[in-house]
Length: 117
Image: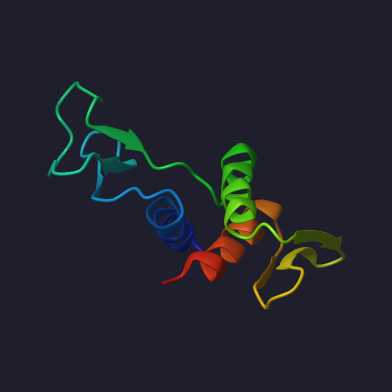
């Protein structure tokens, strides 16, 4: 995956797993931000109406928050498997699963399968 695809998956997770909406890119830092409902752009010098979109696909602590949401949605069981190709995550009884070279990306791909509308 390229950087754009990682960030698109981060936005999907932010929106569909954590309920964030109204995204834009900061014209100062270039970082992706989520705005509070109803706002059209960040207020200059004021972060009260927005926050950075976490890097769920590359940051371990952000990915663990995603995994927690997955476990809360699908409480019957989630299995994490490390193998020679990377990581595999799956539900124990129904067909949601994902694989990738890193645990963080695997968790996010799994969440996309679990939370897609």
